[in-house]
Image (cartoon, rainbow, N blue to C red; front, side):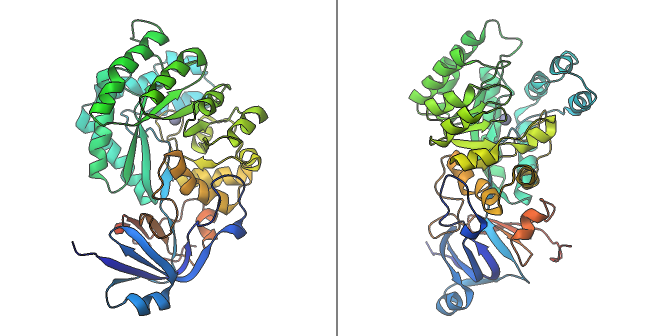
Length: 422
Ligand SMILES: [Zn+2]
């Protein structure tokens, strides 16, 4: 097969994210910035990054030249490591009731809460769910998100969980972003299940887990560990079983009460997500582990609660990623960069910390080693912004859209913005 070479540039700045450690606080001075840069791509993979003129001299005869207009800045494609975008329905009424002072229980009694989304999702045909998931994935892709984790969890029956995961698999073929499916059958105990939490989880283990393997629908297992969802005594053996079967683990941990992060660390989960209620005990535990701490600022903005203690986590030495948590209940915004930039102002995060959390550190949360930094050998997934200074990307808090998004060495989004963002 012919090896297609592309030389792209000249770029005002390329932020490679190379050399930044996987864990802990990062200063902006640690960002590697290549000025007047070119990138050589081959078969969807980065071949070389360096001074444009010298790359041009060496490669212009073999490579197709893609000239970038005006001043542009490149950085790795964003990775959203926590979403629930495969759902039907709308929970605007929950949002209104919550802001009018209703309690969680009152909202559930008025027909809201997760169960409302479960009802709508179960009532949707698989192809409707595919369409909705593709639309949301494309919206994220237009913001520069090239890899998107997508959870099930609104089926809560074997056949309905399979329907959602199968919809995610089909949606993955219909969008240029990579969708990474995660099984969240342990989202809540379904109201119509005849039995307790243990019986429900047993059924998922014995019936659903093997089907996920044979139908190759997911190799990641998630659980919502909380007093109102699943508690430690039942969820630990469930996750243990998933681990034995070869699933990667991730958990919804410490959102309102602690205990989830401890289980995550004990079981060697890839990530512990939420952590708004984590105290110094949990922060230290996570920091000393290989588990990635995932902050979900859009959920704090959606329900009006504290942010994840991101500064403390980084200072303690944790690996911090940021996800959108896009879901119809607590995080309807679907704006990854905006929510990350708001977290940065509230928690005092450096640009280097925010950009690391949206790229290679989020890749680590998903167990992906082929993306998240712009270095030779990595996938050519990157975002181009029409600006002369990377600081503008976080400064505009997500309102400056990418000029282009590239996935696997191909331009998949081109926004005809005129360049100068003021
Ligand atoms: Zn979530």
